[in-house]
Picture 1 (tube, rainbow, N blue to C red):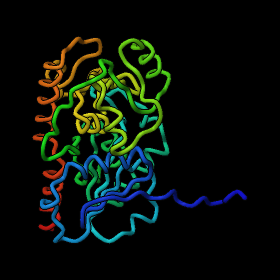
Picture 2: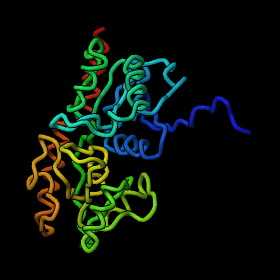
Picture 3: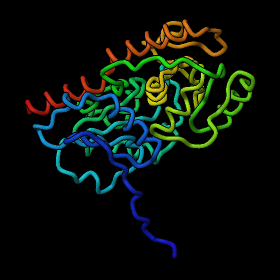
Length: 280
């Protein structure tokens, strides 16, 4: 029997004490798992009451917004690249409406890409004071590099025509992950390879921070199309087609992990939000 009004999809939940992450898809729960794994439990403050983190607010959370406590929305999609070129999320009206609805309901919205500021300036300029920009999802302590047993690169994620064509062009040097893996299974699947291959869903200059976080947790260096400012090719990641040995991979991985954990640590972001909330 067809439902006239289908029920909300199941909400996935994980967290540490008063800090709880909610998501609607396993791929978004992966981001939550990676963030939680990077927290130091003793640093997670719960004296201000529950803190709810809504991961991936291009998905609708419905009645989940009625929870009591501080509500942090995390926007993971790319509306614009660094040059201002429109990307896939800007063409999806359903995504746009869901994000704007979340912005109204949350106390703070973290958008992982500063390039998306144009979207909010156009559609919700009166709510700009709620928004923090940047990929503030990285761990407190940089993970360790993991040596490779397979010289190939590994790609994981959704394949569209653009990515498939690029991956086919790397057939001798890279492969796609066979099947869907999440949580520790994903990290285990990535560890044998020389690095993680990052191919953009749309052409442009932007950073897939969630993929970078999973790669970092697995101890893998990133080989990528151009990433957004702050991440420097040859210093924090390798360009497509670059040749590198294990020593270079380790040095590049460690430079990237140190930079991201010092600049975009989730715990520091959370502490700042809690301080502001306590002062209100």
